[in-house]
Every structure is written in C-alpha cells, then in structure tokens.
Length: 335
Ligand code: MG
Image (cartoon, rainbow, N blue to C red):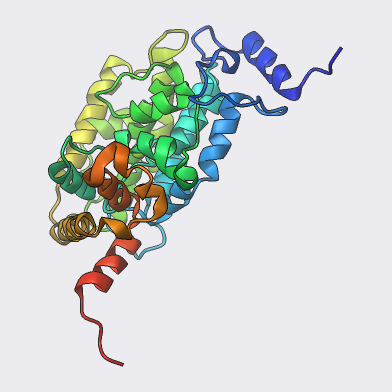
C-alpha cells in the first residue's frame, strides 16, 4: 500500500477538526487547469504560497493605503494593510473552526488588483475604461491572467471567489471569504485611525464617545474588542457579523473616518495630481500599446487595447507611476 501523504493527513485533520461551516480543502471546486496534488500542502496552502511569491504581492509595498506614497516609515501601505487583514482574519477563522489556510490565501490576495494611489487611481480608470474598473475584479485578472508571465496563478475556485467578492456589497461563497471581507474593514478603520493621528489629521479624542466606550481607546483595544464581538455574534452560525449594537457603532466609526479622513482635504491634497498622472499614463499607453510588456500584450486579442492598458496602469506602484510620468512628460535637464 502506498504511504499516506502529508497532504492527505492534513485533509483528514480538517475533516475531523473544523466546524461544519468550514470549507474543506479536499472538497475544493478545483482549478481551471487541473494539476498534480502537492505531497505536503493542501490546495489552499499551495494557493497562499503562490500568492506570497508572486510579483503583484511584492508591489503592494509601494502602493497607497490612504496617504499617498508616504515618506514616514510607519504609515501603512497596501502591503502592511494586507498583513494586518491576514492577522485579524486568521484569528477569527481559527476561533470559529474555519479553514485558516483558505482564509490566509484570500487575505493575502484580496488587494492585488489595487491601482497606484489607492481608490483615487481606481476612480480614474473606472471613468476611462469602457465597462468600468474595480480593484476586486482587477484582482481576479491579476491572478488569472497577468501573473506568472501572463499565464496566471491557476488558483482554486474558493480563493478566486474570496478575492473578487471581498468588498462589503458582495457575497463570498465561503465562510472564509466572509471572514476576510469583515476583517478588511476592521483592519482599515483601525489602522487608518492610527495613521491619521500620526499625520496630525485627527487626535484620538476626536473619535465619537460612543465608539470609544464600545471599542476602547487604543488601537489594540479596538481590534481586540471588535474581534471578540464578531466571535460572540458568529460562532457556531453560518454568518460572520458584528452584534447589532457593535455593528451600529462600527458604522458610526466608519462614517466618521469618511468625513474626517478619507474625504479630508489635508489627507487628499495631492489627489488631483495623482488623478492627472493616472489619466496621462492611461492615454499615453493606449496610444502606444506596443510599448506594453509581453505579459499584457498576450491578452490584446481577447480583451482589447483599453482593458490591457488599464491592466498595465493598475499594476504600477505609486513610485513607478510617478517615475514613468516624469520620464514621459517632464523634460529632463541637459547634462
Ligand atoms: Mg483591503
């Protein structure tokens, strides 16, 4: 009899240990192109590793969270945001008996489709590209078509579903996808408070009283009490949610952040320029499509010039976009 693989032991462990609401790796709906199973890792562990090793993941370090290309070392970028989402989501998933590997894979991949300059860049492409543009749908293009020299990462259905359905308005097919969606919001509201205080846009005393009473006064108290509340409301249920009272305070806190930080003219003072950079690059590369790298041009026939130009711009980091803009539109001094 063939020796049992380490992977099949993990699969058996999942079946015996996890909640009835968890997604078992052995029941995955699989990949677009079937591959030989790994000896050691389940399909979701493997997807997590494929994401961690891809180029788009490394580019997250130079993409805006809220503050554009911040010079201070302690501001969040998309990469640190992604890691904080992963931490919160894994804590919740483990406590609920859900599949932690699937949760981690979705969390690490959820923002791979973000443009340079965050939602500002996303808004420009959405306006310019026929059919619209959103970072979650772009995330799916990154893992399906753009990564791995244009071949895609060939991820499982469940990870792809969690990536494209992570925004609040969407409905992920798995509990693990729901955990990441809520953890994304918990992560950004909290770290954006921290960054806004660091930037002098807020003081912690500005946070509405009822939110401070409900969630606490420090970054760690707030994350901890939010996670505990989600577990209280969701354990042994097929939902991932806050209790009603906490949901109300969380919405209040989120609205407070929209009014005071996300739409704050100090935090957003460079936005108009960022919009100009993204628009100029999109227009230029649409006119010079032959300059796009091969992994984008591969998809020209299938997806058309506008979509692949948007792919190319979306993949740029803040720093690369600014550098490209300078090279293309700002005359260099003679030397
Ligand atoms: Mg996110």
